[in-house]
Amino acid sequence: MSTGDKAYSVPLYTTSNGCPVRNPNAMIKMGKFGPALLQDHHLIDLLAHFDRERIPERVAHAKGSGAHGYFEVTDDVSDLVYADFLNGIGKRTPLFTRFSTVGGEKGTADSERDPRGFAIKLYTQEGVIDWVNINSPIFFIRNGVQFPFLVHTQKSRDPQTNLKDVNVYWDFLCNNPESVHNVMFVFSDRGTPATYRNMHGYSAHTYKWINKDGEFHYVQIHLKTDQGIKNLSNDQSHALKADNPDHAGQDLHESIDNGDFPSWTCYVQTMTSEQAEKAKFSVFDLTKIWPHSEYPLRRFGKLVLNRNPLNYFAEVEQAAFSPANTVPGIEPSADPVLQARLFSYNDTHRHRLGPNFNQIPINCPLQAHSPFQRDGQGCVNGNYGSEPNYPSSYHPLNYRLDASNNEAHEKWVGEATSFQWAATSNDYDQALALWEVFKKTGQKDAFLYNISDNLKSARTDVQDRVFKLFGKVSSEIEEAVRKATLKVSPRK
Ligand code: NDP
Image 1 (cartoon, rainbow, N blue to C red):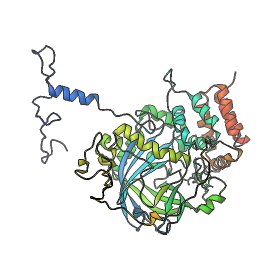
Image 2 (cartoon, rainbow, N blue to C red):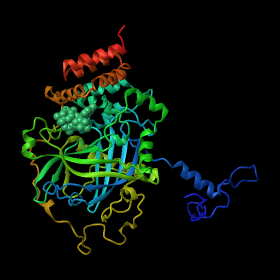
Image 3 (cartoon, rainbow, N blue to C red):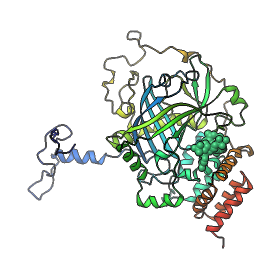
Image 4 (cartoon, protein in one colour):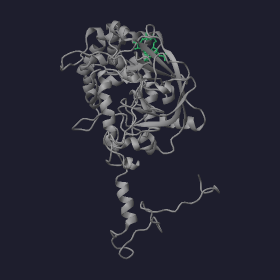
């Protein structure tokens, strides 16, 4: 509201403890030009808070933009899931979404070639559930323990020089060839979406949906953009890094400001446990998609973004998403990368925002009552007053008893063993299928240009290893990547 607005009442400026300040530009000094005095509380209060303005940036997904909106159920899926917010056509659930790049630091360009995060926090009547989607249906790794190695090599800087190193980037990918399917996605033009509004979102992980009879299905969620897929070319993405590094955040903000609300149609793919046992791939393998022809998409909802945040730090920077946040009827699968994320995401928030991060308004559930979590830094919810801080016989609580108590679950048997899910020759069929999609849809040349433009900066021994990586998928791709790379990076 501007000061020209009659309804605006000019607030009284005070220190953080509420003491009115005469002149915010003045300091208490010994004489006009002498040293400053420690008793100048306005100065000390201001500087001390300024010194603490930054919280740690996210190790991954540091650069992001967010918006509020809603999810609406459009089709009945009650045969699949009893989660309250997914039952009842027309039912709406408020949500907050944060889009991001993965590898970029907080100030880097929105147009970087990188996966995009598409995290959604749904404030349901039964708690907050977060859908921590990305814009690809797959990911580079399937061993959860490798998450830090992936991020160190794809985003971090050399420990000595603090420079990014394309050789390290490719070294990790060549050592873990199951990554090649996602490498192909990222080096197609879908690796540089034109805006956040013009890309799909995928759960990529498998989750479990449980119905009212206690039966479960494995599911994958797809959010298809209603704006249509639009991508930047490699050259456009490079140019935008200099011209407007915040272009995607700006586009999101302006489109919502203009009343042009972006939306996505939500679909689910399902598999019974019997189907999963017969599938050619493991449903817990994050490097694999579920082919549409065998596991068709079933529509169940719509997601609309219609309100911009009022304050970036409060709402976007402090938004704390985690796949561990779920509601009755929806559970994680045994996907090893998902299992690692279940711990790592909330652990990051405890580090960045403190143990009471769920009390911050953007993270706060519609209702929560967890009096056994007490005290700690930043507790602002009254700390449950005089309630007991253990399950007390004298002050009982209600516990939810329903279908979730008699669900059918997987039965796991085995030895505790150290296991790396290494690549085998059976791991490359889907990467080859994507190559066929590129050829059929005229995306092959862009893929070859994009990858050669990146590889031209790598050492020749690294280039040779990357050619061999693609050779695992097919000799046709290996030859095509070699030819395109040597054209822009001729050998002496
Ligand atoms: P289909 O042959 O039924 O459809 C091809 C899929 O590829 C569509 O979902 C299409 O998305 C998507 N696609 C088109 N261009 C690209 C690109 N540059 N990068 C990534 N995806 C693209 O798919 P299948 O299920 O038989 O799978 C064939 C291959 O397609 C897979 O191996 C996988 O690599 C890829 N794919 C499959 C998905 C799945 O969930 N099954 C999802 C996304 C990709 P759109 O409809 O928006 O054009």
